[in-house]
Length: 82
Image (cartoon, rainbow, N blue to C red):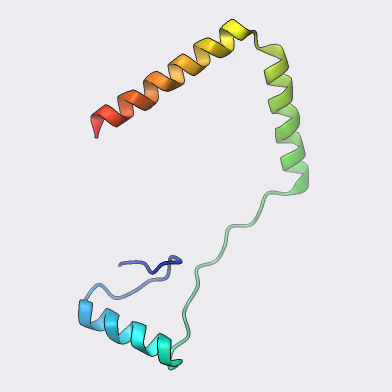
């Protein structure tokens, strides 16, 4: 089923979709909004930042370079497969 600009479910048929949009615009139907994902807790965000800082401190410049090169190769490989 096609989705609206904010992820709402809409009919696949063009005419049905037009009728649905018109009803929403005139207020006959209210737009069903999808549920939002819960945000991360503050504790999880803090721990993530601490882990990232510890990893950055432990990596050497050479190892960071190797990781970056490997990531770039994976990105380019994925783009060439498309």
